[in-house]
Length: 397
Image 1 (cartoon, rainbow, N blue to C red):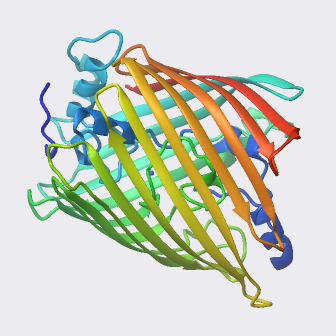
Image 2 (cartoon, rainbow, N blue to C red):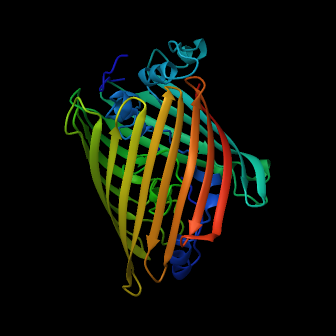
């Protein structure tokens, strides 16, 4: 398998708060099921690809921090690692719509069925259109437009509410000065923090406002090489947040691979941001470790310190994440994830969660994901919360 790491080839927010005090309280009480219905799978990044010696996301994605549209090379890798196998063949329609290679287009669709307590339902989870347009040799435009289904129990009619659910996930102009592994970006995108996992209900994302509300207006500098990845980003509100909930700040993140020939890396990130109601400082560490092409360990530890603007009250939060994946075949992943959340008063919380996940990549474009999840509140079995979910994910055109 060719392993060229550097071939050249992530909104309308949910209104949660009506006044400043309510904004702060609801910030920490978003129901997991609602977030799951809205946000699971916005991006499709695979940090586990380090098992195949892919350290940088740029091998397979147009975006320097992964997720979104795959490059032709990335689609070839996805096909080769699928059950179907073989070579990726571009459809005649896709070739015609590429306008002599200037434009790459795709769609992402995710359907789900779950049982959660007394709830049992099937629903569309995601529907996105993605576009990469090469404006010239150095300049490109990346766009991601999606439609989000409403939360369970809402009075939704397709004809009245459809346009209200269409969101702009990404609108980014990127400039690459050359082949030196650097890029300058400006526009609306996800913040490059943490492992870049594709499930936005993980505690390290859901309770840190990462890649959920953090689709912001930003100016970023990205650099990638065989041993070091880093990003420097300044950001401001996207103008679509609820009143007083727009955040401005900055991010510094890095990942380092000590030895080129070993599939092990570690990294860290710092985010500092402020809204009218609350400020936060997020610091974290992460690691990716592959013992072989069959076993991968991902881990992340984050600490967030928040301060209320009105009272000056400060409180901390820890989130922990560990995922162990086993691949008996390239197209089949079985994984165990373990998570925990600890938050200080006055918003004290203690939650732990374990899940078994199995993913079958049937073709380069079609995957099936099975999840069985147990969640414990304050480590007491009496507050056990179980969920069983099946997802069907299509990423292609």
